[in-house]
Length: 293
Image (cartoon, rainbow, N blue to C red; front, side, top):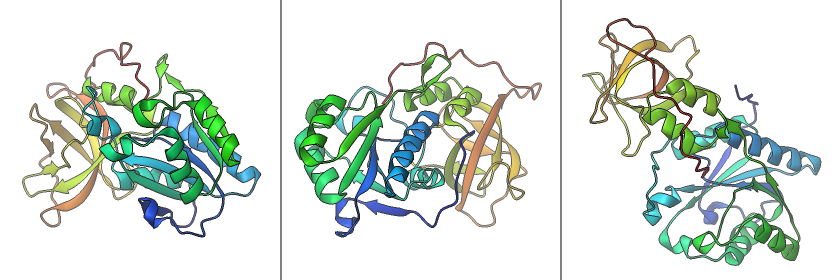
């Protein structure tokens, strides 16, 4: 599992306009970071280590909504985490500030050179940037790590890349986690994430958990799960969860909200069958998409 640290409350900037003008030089990592899985955790760890060597704060730059959704690319972009949850997980891994860039078609047209100047140089005062080996940026994804190193040299900061982490002989990626969930294999998803898959929603009196459109739910089926802030917390509640073919999520009859629309966190632990209550075999994940974005 991913280790955590305890720091003061994290900083969350929703756009470059919220970054203080006197923000100090820092170490930055960039990506969508949906799910903040084990591969992301390693990237964040490398960024923190680079920051600590020179006593710099660490900043994570993410995008919302998912770039592929805005660009209409034929990819599954179901959200593994909300932006707030992403920031919470990044904070647990030692990130000092999270900057959420609203991804628009206008931002998609920004060149690699302009992105570096606008985001890394002028707004964040970057001293070091650490990205995944498959990192692409700028209009049409024209920029890569070679481009980033060239621009870093021009602007007086350092750039380095981190090789991808693998899970089940495939890149440990958000796409892989989504594939596991689509197969109903919440155990494999948890192995890639470094924790059980969690979704946040509102619990109604008829035990339905209302989620934001586009939330990554597992395949239709019955699951062992827990309701609560953390799955192992003393105040969390074990329950059976049902996901229907029309993506409705319902908890067992023993679950009752304190009031209608109570916020709740739902953790998926394993898949079961109604007949036996035993873990249900799920589809193999060996042929998961090799996409790593």
